[in-house]
Image (cartoon, rainbow, N blue to C red):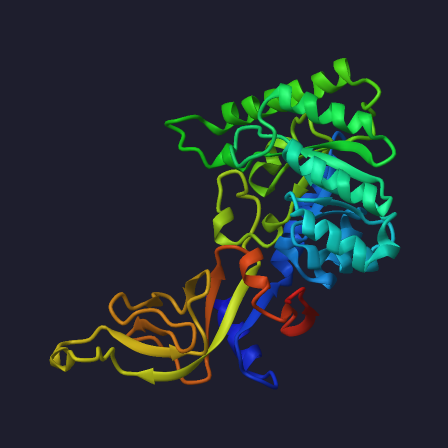
Length: 386
């Protein structure tokens, strides 16, 4: 990667303005995207659903949507719902978390012309369903309701067949206001459990068994609500490769894996490559670190230079130049962070240092623009930054 960062540094220095930039390596991203396409081609039992929060740029989402030939999206943040509806004429949206009833009311009071759009609202409790039902009655709406089930993550959601049955009975009683649209069972725990507790294969099988119990209950006790067109959503990037091999789900969510921030360095995603970087200019170069109040240390031998950079303290790890790291005693800063590089590193003011984000969803929203880097040039894509 040394050659890549050295060339990227040179190309960034040719740009009009020097400030922190969020860069997508187009070649790595395209390889990741092609891998995902190939996986879905061999997995006809699941359909792709793109997670918007992890890829929060309209141009980025359009490119993925076109490549995968899908307009199914998972939305986690209400302000990101409208641009999806406005820019994708066949948008099929599943809310990725249960929205406060105030968010539901706000959306339909401010965007009445979207009341017939294809939105599945996620419900996790009988109480939330009743809240949504009251809004539907007041506004004469028919809401599509997808039910969040707990398949082992234990982050809330419906955790008993009795509760699931009670909720389905309520939906059945109000067909003019509520339409059952499916289930959502997120299984991020599958690959994160320490193997000494449970290996990933067994954890996945157990989560699938719970999911199947819910499906069976609907088929046997609520046949009038069952349809082969129901959205049975599961997955996430970390369990992606389990679902494409075998899944009781028919709808598979993913997002972060296409950019592969470091939280997704998993043995189950080794085919994918990091494609997202923060590049930020060096403001100051000092021959060594000088700690306030400890000038006596200045006389000691020094193995590292001290750099002050533009910005800092992101959810990201310093990657380049080699050996770059924050100073443990000097402290962190989001304004001018001080980092150390080995004494023999050739670096000057206005050069760039590079970081790898730990998450894409937390970082993209901090930047107004993504810079897609291809053939030593940059294409700019606006983000969903609020």
